[in-house]
Length: 207
Image 1 (tube, rainbow, N blue to C red):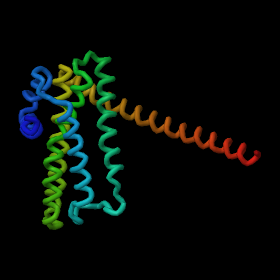
Image 2 (cartoon, rainbow, N blue to C red; image 1 turned 90 degrees about the vertical axis):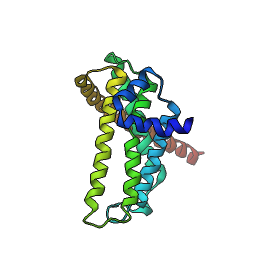
Image 3 (cartoon, one colour; image 1 turned 90 degrees about the horizontal axis):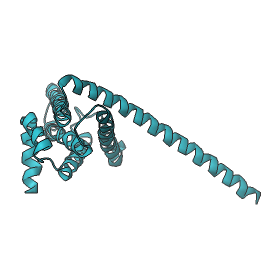
Image 4 (spheres, rainbow, N blue to C red; image 1 turned 180 degrees about the vertical axis):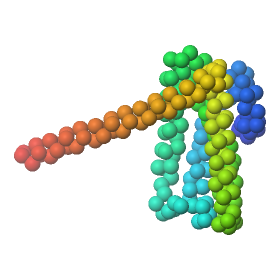
C-alpha cells in the first residue's frame, strides 16, 4: 500500500495537479511520511547528479563535494520555505495547515527527481553538441516544479492566482529575512563564544 502511494499517486499528481492537490486537501490523499521520503529522494538524486553526471555537463569537482553539505542546502531551504509560507498565509487567511504545506511542496519535487535521475544517466553517453538537451531537461524540471508548487499553494490555501503569486513573492522575502536573521544569530553566537573562551583562557593563565 505504501509503495503504491509512494510511486503512483505523486506521479498522478504531477500529471493532474488540480485534481491531485484537491484530493490532498479534502480527501486526505497526501501523507507526511511520503512527503519526507520524497524530500530524501530528491537529496539523493541531487547528490548523485552532482557527483556522477558526465564530465561534459558536470562543472563540480567530485573530490570537493560533501554529501552533508548537500543535505543542508536542500533540506534546510525546504523547511524554511514551509515555515515562511505558513507564517505569511496565516496572516492572509490561508486555509492550508503547516502539514499540508509540507506535503504539497514535497509532492511538487517529484518531476525533479525523475528528470534528474534520467539526465544523470543520459550525461554519461551524450556528446558536447547534445549537452543542450541535458540543460533543457533540467529547465523543464524546474519549470514543472514551479508550476506544481503554484497549483499546490493555490489549492491548499484556496487562493486566487493573483493572491498566490503575491503570497509566493512574500514567502521568498520572508525566507530571505529568516536566513539573514539565522546567519546574524550564528555570527553573534560565535563572537560570544570567542569572547567567553578568551576570558576563560586569561583567567586560566593568571591562576
